[in-house]
Image (cartoon, rainbow, N blue to C red; front, side, top):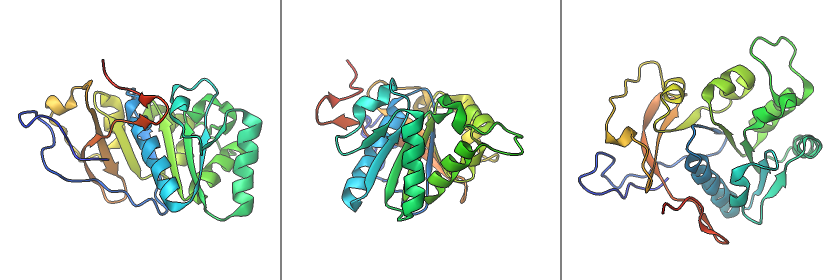
Length: 226
């Protein structure tokens, strides 16, 4: 997540700060309707996997729009059978050498665990264990309410929340109860920069970040504005 490059008179971050996340045992939950946010985090996860010599795995439905961003080195699983087999294999090997990206897994009802369920399904338990034992996991859902109601087993495992600006419901769910947001120009979605909030639920630290434009070697800037 790179420093802000907005104009000096813009109401946003003006310093040269850099938000750095150490992914050893820390997993990330992304929410919001701005797909540039999970795209940026996916690029960061891919870069981390390459630097650390880790395997990158993408789990989603075949038609997911972020699939075109996946690097050639990533292994993509788009069917329920393939996802089950891959997650089970990771747990069997137990080497903690995987970076996993889960894109809207609530679409596969077998992996969901509705709130209040006394006996979760085997697939829901498999997803929970896979997230817990990954070197890094990125979980993306457009609505935080879906995570709370359908994937509650993920909330405690992903203390880092990154939420696109403009999604007030997701912001309230992602930030600490004591957080008070004063709306500014930063909170208006921008075409030329990706604005988001981050929150560490463990430390209750939170703030604003400007994410980098995702870049695909084959297609150039995936979300480049006109």
